[in-house]
Length: 333
Image (tube, rainbow, N blue to C red):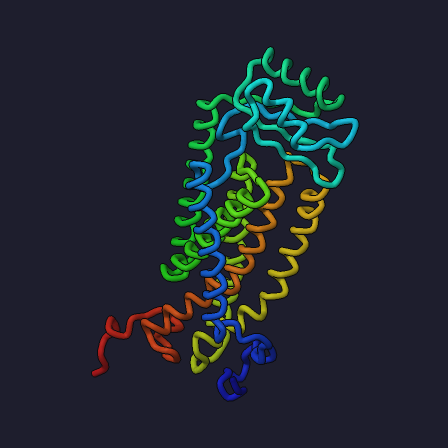
């Protein structure tokens, strides 16, 4: 891109020598997303085959009784399972802190208070004394209702964002922003399915809250970049191709997007490490989603927009910049 391609009073001229050719490497970005998507889909398929659901559902959705216990000495999973077997609960899910061996999360089928107290007495007698940090019991009917409500909340928020994007931008801008949102949500769910299979990470009601937050965060980043593209289209000479304008806009907003995301993720890292078992999954879901959100805003939504306009209007025409179909324009003379 040369100075002759700019208008004499172009205020953005000093920024046109961008550092990264993001659009030119679109195939690489698309391939990376496809690879992560395949990993997520395979994980969801394995989870569906082994657990009956695409994700390892938490107590909020599947129903059951959850005990969060702090033992006075290190214990083993085998000790806990032997004690639970006396109450025909040997198949319960046990998550033991591997560092100390004293913190345990035990998820069992729904128990009455009397049944739970009997289980606790057996654990104290046959394993070790403990302090009960948390006890929760959710019936399967309530769990299904919560799951249905969570899905409806995600769909409604997604629909409202679709309406907003369609009103604010041209239709193709909106379409690829929506595709970027789907990219973030689907990949977050897929990676969480992988974590459920490998480390027992569960999706609970906080996971739904995380998805809603991810959707809002991702669309905000995409809107900022799209606004910069529209602004540069007005400032930069018409001789400059649409791909070049998008590259310029991405480079101008790259540092802002990265810094904002990193700043947001710092407290999430602290929550994931020190927030305890209840908040750990929520923080990890947000970390995954925010990373995917900034990635899709920079490397997916805008490159897809460029690819679409190049396919429909050509690589360097003014029609590609304006989003006009040449066949729809009146002929000269």
